[in-house]
Picture 1 (cartoon, helix red, strand yellow):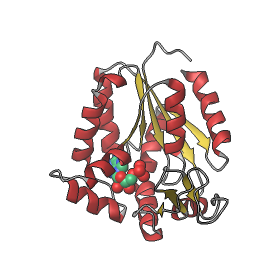
Picture 2 (picture 1 turned 90 degrees about the vertical axis):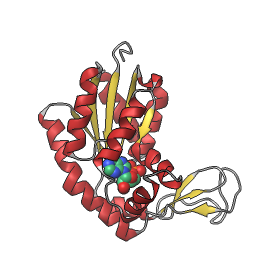
Picture 3 (picture 1 turned 180 degrees about the vertical axis):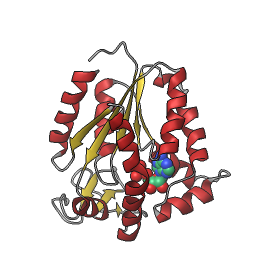
Picture 4 (picture 1 turned 135 degrees about the vertical axis):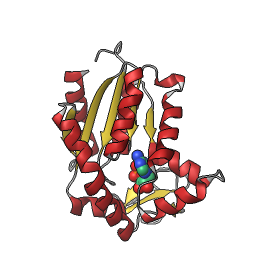
Length: 222
Ligand code: AMP
């Protein structure tokens, strides 16, 4: 890949598509930061700033946090020096207004934009998301349908018996997040497709298979 051209990679996928994991692997491989708006918002929500309460309430019900809040967070994060060589956006933009805002931000910087969709059927997503839990000791991720610890109650990695479910991972909230995805984010995919910026990857396979296809696509365009 030509590392002299700064790249803006946008990762789009429904909740549970694995876009976060793929973004992390890609970030390590390309040596550019992964910027997850979900992670940033969770951090703000757990603090006590002016917006924390509002953000917490929205995230708990699976809705989208207002564009103006995202605009400030993204503008400030993208202006940090580690983004100069490029960055991977995980979870932004999620609607057409955010697309337009990102375009205005990227216009002033000279990035090559590439958008990746990770597509996964809805029934698989529901199991992935509702079954997901993690070890509080080391952060290892498990799934009660697809990936249990070898010993039911003990983390394979660190031996802890303390596991956590994300508070927004119950089925009702997941369905709401999928509804938001269909309504707000599918038009974003159509928009980028029409501009020939979209690469679509079949996400209903193992992490390694998805990652191989992703890097294969990227090596052709970067
Ligand atoms: P994620 O970790 O990407 O699944 O995001 C978790 C939650 O954070 C979402 O369900 C939204 O409530 C909020 N969120 C993350 N990114 C955005 C965004 N670009 N626009 C609005 N809300 C967002």
